[in-house]
Picture 1 (cartoon, rainbow over the protein chains, first blue to last red):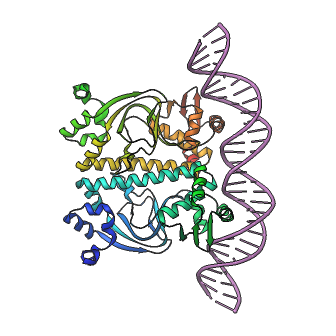
Picture 2 (picture 1 turned 120 degrees about the vertical axis):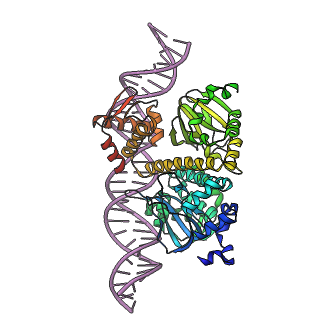
Picture 3 (picture 1 turned 90 degrees about the vertical axis):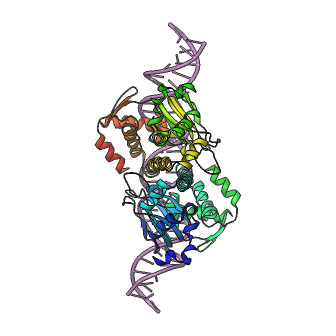
Length: 231
Length: 231
DNA sequence: ATTAAAACATGATTGAAATCATAATAATAT
DNA sequence: ATATTATTATGATTTCAATCATGTTTTAAT
């Protein structure tokens, strides 16, 4: 892992996940020494629910889904774009297993950090731990929103929610190329593929969105927001 | 707050929330000085979603529900028994509002701790922060389970889940006096009151539970677990 | 004790959305 | 270039569970 100590490494994203900026020199070096850069191909599994948690992941590029596995259908907890950490919820005394699975929608590069190191940093560096708490609470707040959307809204509201989420949180633009199939969108909104297709047509006919192929543009965000709020 | 410094206070529950044991003398005193003991009557609201977060709550006795408020219906995130902390998810840089509401099913006594003090402790005491991370991740894991139950299981599975949760997590006994109405159970399982009534009768007829008045006994836990797993 | 209001109960009806069935396109592999 | 598979599409049917309607019992209030 020589490249990690090179000048080049200093420019990589890992230091942009704000928590790493709070480490002193020795701590940074510890992280660097137990860090690996990995690339996963579309569809590959990064984290397997129930597996012993060995690493925290920092997404450098790509797009992943975090989901709960269960009997028949998965439940997607959220989609996570680059510059975010994965696996924090496994930082736990005792039972050190990942509480969810993570796989990627598109080729994804991550930097892994040894979870033992990570835990040590939390135990010895209060500022670092504080940042992790912030991070955890931010992602929890997001899950709450999704929990509400999926349990209390019906199809229209749920589709509006996911479209707004993709625009605001993931792609940070009202038009974007969707790397997701209708089937993926169905999984994401907890509805059948057929319902997604029907609703997207409806939204398009109503002038809420434009679509050609994989490219989407939200043309009436205020109305989408109203639909989201009405459920 | 003289009573807080008395010998009596030293025996109260606050030190039993393991994180407080990690404080040194000065820190403990800081907590004690900014702590209040409050009693809420059945149905009262302890924490209001969206309000500025002023305190962390430690439940000494009673039973509360933590829920998201929304347009029409609330979404219960979990029920929390005594010896747990409430409001941790509001420990956040910047936007310091509670992300959920909390009200109580029965008379509830809580000890409040000033949130500014709490944050300071997190920033200065890594062991304390570490414990908080544990606590957050534990409650997140629980929410995940509920999220899955409510979005992927149908009525039978959801009712089995909540009965098992009450027995295992809340009352720690297979028979207990339920302080919840059928309406409350409906809110908790995301189903209509009528469905709760119908299903409870069905479970009783099938020999899964016994009920007289408010007292419930789970008579066939293995089968309830199978129902929970099947959905 | 009597009334009012919750809570519990059961059957009938309705509704939202999944599933099923069947095609048409588009993408990928051979 | 052709076959195979995945994706998109649309209509018909079914299902689960909510809502509605109505009645009974229990609890709380005057």
